[in-house]
Length: 147
Image (tube, rainbow, N blue to C red; front, side, top):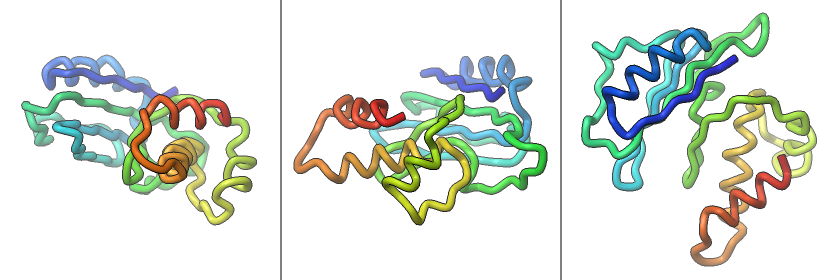
């Protein structure tokens, strides 16, 4: 079972990482958010915060400790959390039972085997379908109704 944690302070983020580190050591992802821009760090295994450069002035930090999702799995940057598109970034802990159906219906050429990858793709898809600015909750609602 994976671990997801977040904080507005780096010091608390590190404490929460330690508390969640037993939830998965296959891969770790960290995202910093500042002024609507983000920086993502993904790596196989665990993170050494003594060697990790995080911007102390970031407004939010979010992390994901991933447990292996199958017996045989190679680590790849593109199959690790957080998943990002032009407008969206997210982490997810769960199983999408309709992953294959969503891929077939919306993105037949989608090759990422991780079900969470379809969530960010759908969020981006519906964002692009709207003309003009739209509140995020409208797009999120559309995607949640499909999941």
